[in-house]
Length: 93
Image 1 (cartoon, rainbow, N blue to C red):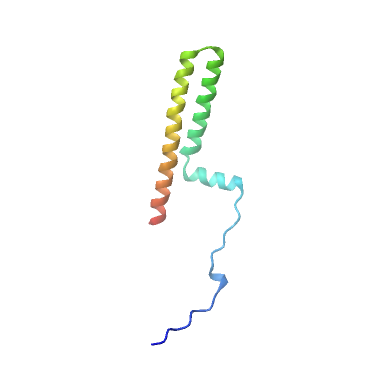
Image 2 (tube, helix red, strand yellow; image 1 turned 90 degrees about the vertical axis):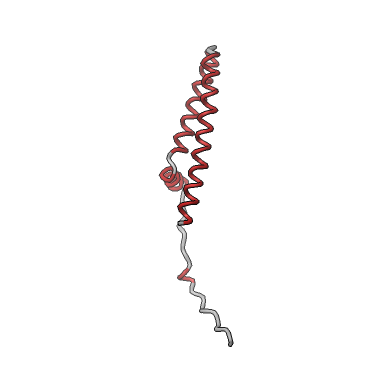
C-alpha cells in the first residue's frame, strides 16, 4: 500500500508570537508569581537595615538582620522553585 503525499505547507497555521518588552514581561511574571518580587524587596530591605545598623555600631541588631536576610533569601528561592513547579504542573494539564 503506497503512502499518501504529505499535506501542503500552510504558513498561516503556524502560531505567531508578539514581541514583549521588559515592562510587559515584568508585569506578567509578577502576576504569575507575586511572591518572588515581594521576597526580593524584603531581602533588600533587611539587608539595607542590617548595613545601617552595622555602620551605626549596633552589632547585635546587625547580626540579627543578617540572619533575617538569609531567611528572606531562602523564602525567595523557595517561592521561585514553587512557581516553577506550579507552572510545570499547569502546562502539563
